[in-house]
Image 1 (cartoon, rainbow, N blue to C red):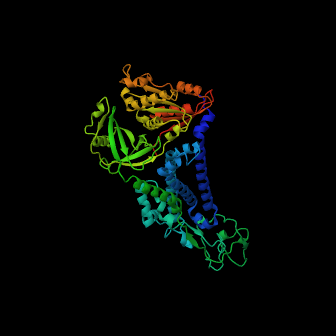
Image 2 (cartoon, rainbow, N blue to C red):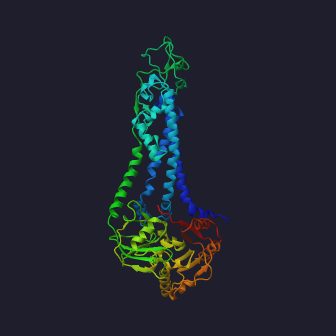
Length: 555
């Protein structure tokens, strides 16, 4: 299966280009900071004392600052949903790149972990060097109080050091970012003109047997020099090629102004403002209008909320205090409010403690999923809060001329809202042909949206557009030939196939029928199906058709 570079660039190009830019920015920032502390004259004495540990610790801190700044941005869901709207970001490639926000969040998190380890290790080396290279001539930059002082005291005997230990317990790897070695000791020299690094002060009394720490015996950096007076006796390390550096005053050092707040404060404030906005927006409970028990342990909840607007394919986060005061869960909207009706709804599969408890609160009896027909229950429902809606890749399904939607089991939910929207009117959208593939293990699962599929099918036939939607239902596990019971489901029974789709033949057929077109591929289901579709979308075909792959991912 040959890879098409045209399809690969369409699916992966923007993602890898952004990743390359981000990686280059990290490398540039690390190298720039490393050279600053390695060659900068203002850090000459500190570098002689700490060595490469200083350079690595500060360079890794710069990378940490950048990624701590970026890691919160992908979690600003309201901002992403705002940008995700077609009117806000005109380029479809940019909108598809926004859909990778969760992946970028994880990437930044992994980077923070890696460079935290490097940062911690470098500062442990710094603590050891402070003790071994203690120098009485430069007390201002010494963290140790005497030569050979136990380095553990530098980490555990100061308030900043103890806060670093606390960060170890809370954040594991990011532990010594606030230790004393960072906040109060890593200083830079401020009077370079009056005191060039390594210079000799003639006003200072020289002792006969002057000893220089080993760390300070390296050659001095190039700087303005003056001839060394013949009548002065100066230690050999301070003389090079009969020239010396004369200074007029002792070196002065100043602590760094904290930088981390500068990197983090902006995204942190943005995130906090968004969280406050989300709390205010979701503070009013919704009104549950009906609850429907579907086969195969699936529950449908229909709700109404004032001023609630959503686009097909978006999702919401449900919070029910009676189920759990701290737990919330995302669910894709299967029905969006329109101009004619304010009702919206979700389908949830009962798996796990939260959904089981939620079902028990909504239904009088939890065993009603065995009924053949959905049963409506009317009762006093518990308070339910809705946070959202938030964007997802499936909003793009209506913006392609041709779309291929593949669902596995309950993964059909994002496409249900798209089908409901088309039922209200399809002519105002760009979409002109929809391939809908739904794979389930049991035939009863198709009944979740069988009525919706039949109504959409009948509507398109009445409007003389039977080719608008191509429905294929696959029953992956069965003991014999089965069908969806009911006369009104005959249109679906003729499209019910036994077994699994032959994906390669399916892609070839779609490409042949849509030559030289761009087709949006949308998948919500098991990872195995997703990987196959992703691979096929990047493959070449002889019809000039390009497939752009999209996958559901709650951010």
